[in-house]
Length: 258
Image (cartoon, rainbow, N blue to C red; front, side, top):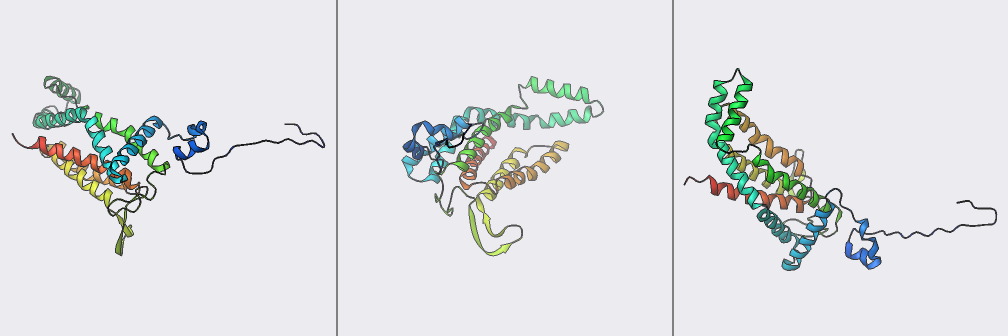
């Protein structure tokens, strides 16, 4: 823009300052809805928020809406979860044979890998099959994380002892604890306990060197997730906790001797 002497140039801009609330933005200008973007999984984030709003309309509580959403996603992925659990159970049944092969071909890694692959092929077991439901959960998890972090829907929403589902579920303590202070987040701890029990069930039949690895993961895996989730919004942790509980219930069910 070139402004000559005794001339002026006027530029007008439309600016929105406010929460990332689609309803509020549509009241101002419906064409501005595109400014709300939830990252890589934007489409899934918008879909999850729509589902949450629908469930909230039924139960009028955001905590219950998140629980229903978690149950709905679980049953949506149930066929894959069923396949995962069966694959894990078949892998457990093959562990004694795999340990025998490890001892037999401990000095021949190529032959060991070949024999283990043949064993999987013979029993039609996919060692990576148990990872598929978790991989499918990841986009949903990240999409929900972005949605809850940026949306105002859960701001100040209460559920049980939780005063704000958009913040960690801080529960006050009468005394200060090392590293934690005078508050403690209950949901991540409950999630760690559930994951520990789930890992314990999945490693019950492991033997030998594999058993030692599983014992390490029994502690490391839940602890790692607990650290990651500890400072996350309570609504997100609640979603993952309910999913973990449903997985645990099903695992207990299929682990019963018939």
